[in-house]
Image (cartoon, rainbow, N blue to C red; front, top):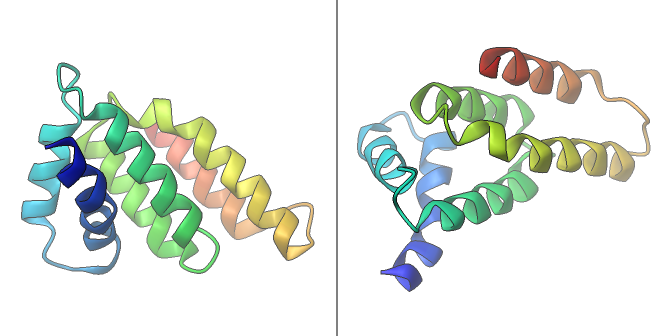
Length: 115
């Protein structure tokens, strides 16, 4: 089960970013995110991998995805914020800017949603 989840979770999260038919993917994420599930760490790892892959080039879609997850798994998303913040700084560094307004606004909206 662990190996299957490790391979499948990034693709499931990408369905949430890019596909309009999200129902099944949301149900899988809800199940995997349950506190008593050992797969929670795999979800966090998959989320960070998807963040690293898509934040820079699909910023608006990425934050729509993250905001959707904040509503579905509000107990897990605060634990993911440090990784998102780190990646925002990394993307700004790669772009050669100290502050990217689109990235920061998306992050601020997500943080406000989680308060």
